[in-house]
Length: 294
Image 1: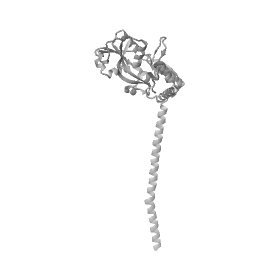
Image 2: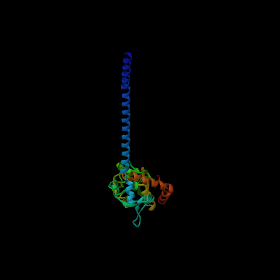
Image 3: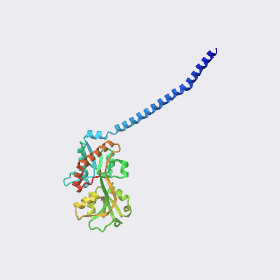
Image 4: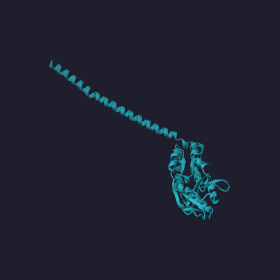
């Protein structure tokens, strides 16, 4: 009888141990499996999101399918982009863009635009890039996908040769011209000069502004140094560039915010051109030395 009671007690103890120890083990296993499932789901969702993002940016594919990209430019901005004596579009930025297109197996369509509406033209799809002495600013970075800088520049004040204006301080009460929508206009607006000049007049392009300066319609012109130096060299004795500058700056290329793959391909082509000497050759033609910085 004692043996039977002892056997019953052993069996009861074994069942109790199985219930107390075995069940938590099963729960722990189920919990681990659930955690692994959640982690796998999150990983899949992340991968799916990345794939969707990559698929959404088909900008380079679209450009390749067209076989060309449209370059929005100011056709009155020498030496970056302008019309020669025969009316043909030329300039440093024009030749640089043409070389980039060639490196990418594409063509570039040169599209003169109203510079004051450049970002609107880009985002509406009329053009694919803004590329013509396009100054990099924080404000513009909010509107477009900006490339790395490829050239340095500055905003300067130009007066007629022999003018009594020798410094920015002498501009008090004078008439100052700027191109509407230009970085020169932005530089003046951000400086103390705006509060000291007598009047600021806007022009559609710098060529018209320089003509007005020559005719005495304005006392001075705020303009990119590359433009000022180009015309000073082209017309010796006509203009004087003040030593003081309004703002140092850098030129970049503007893309639509979503066009990352197209942006990357253009930057890769520029890097190739820097390495094979194409960029230096184009730069030397227009500036006498390699001024590129990509």
